[in-house]
Image (cartoon, rainbow, N blue to C red):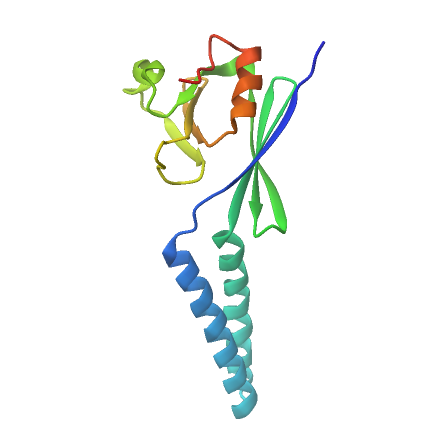
Length: 166
C-alpha cells in the first residue's frame, strides 16, 4: 500500500484591530508598570501584570498559521500560534469528504444552498486569482482551505471523483 505524506503551511491574515490592540496593550503594560514602580502602589503593579497577561494572549492570536498534514487518507489541520504554540484543530477522513474544489468552482454549485457550519482555515482573504478551496465534509461542514498544488494532487490521486482542481 502506498502512503503519501504532504505538509503545507499557510499564514492567515492578521486583522488590523488585533495588531493595534497588541501594541496598545504592550505600551499600556509598560506605562502601568513604570507608574507602579514610581508611585509604589501595589494595585497598579497587579493591574500591569493583568494587562501583560492579556497582551500575551492577544499576541498569540494575532500571528496565526495553519498547517495541513496529509497522511494515509487523512487530512489534519493544526493551528500554530505565534510560531510557539501548536494546537490540533481538526482531522478529516478523505472517505467522508463530499467534494473539494476551488471556492468558485462550478463543481460546488450543488452545495451552495445548504445550511452548513463554515470553518475557515485559509489565508483569510480573496486573492487574485483566488487559490482557496472549499471542502464539504459529511453534509454538515464547509471547510475553507488554502492548500498547495502538491496537496491537491495527492488528494486527487486518492479520491478522483471528490477532489477537483478546476
